Image (cartoon, rainbow, N blue to C red):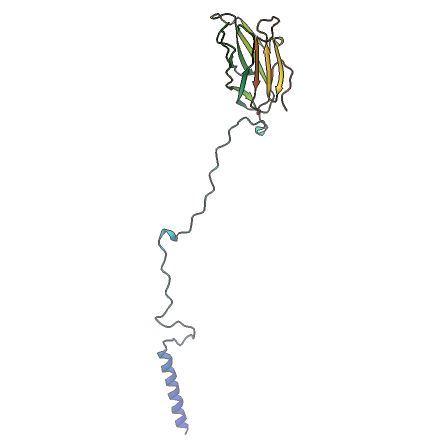
Amino acid sequence: MRTIKSVCLLATMILFVTACSQSNFSGESGNAVRTGNSVPQKPPCTGPSCDPAPPIAPPPPGPTPPDGLTPDNGGTTAIVETGLTLIRNPDVAKWQDCLFVNIVGQAPTDLGCNRPFAYSPTKITDATPRLVKVQTNTCNVLHVALKTSKANGTPVTDNVNTASNPNRFRTTKTGPYEFNVIANDNGDAQWNDLNVTIKGDGKIKFTIEGSNIPCDP
């Protein structure tokens, strides 16, 4: 009887081993992957779309703002150009009166004449802004010079300006950054030989030399 049991046990073991070997499992681990049936690997990506998107570069810095006509400008004083508009009001001068202005220390700018030549019936009314060199962050004192020609073709015979002849000019403040200037070109009782309004662009402070009028705040 013991022999029969031994034979049965042996047969059972043989059947078990045979079944395991037919299941294609290795006997070393119950979690081993079946031989020849491994999970396929994803092929490597080779196209341009496989590369990660490059980082977005920050935009390049823009151009440095020009010095411009800013009243502040970082608190520094710099020479810049600003436009002055000259408005010609009715006058009674018979001679040619030409106006030149400049910030003290800078070259003068020609703002034009009241007529093409002395005794001309044609009066000039051009109001094109002229560029004048000025300074930021300061009260610019505008020097005004009146050059008079008393006859057609003759040289300028009189040069009246706000530095040496302030009594020949009368200045009135007519608005923000705006002055009315009248002048006497020959020292007589007639004050309406030149009558102009000088307007700034509202960015640069200025006043007229000899007027004792303070700059706009």
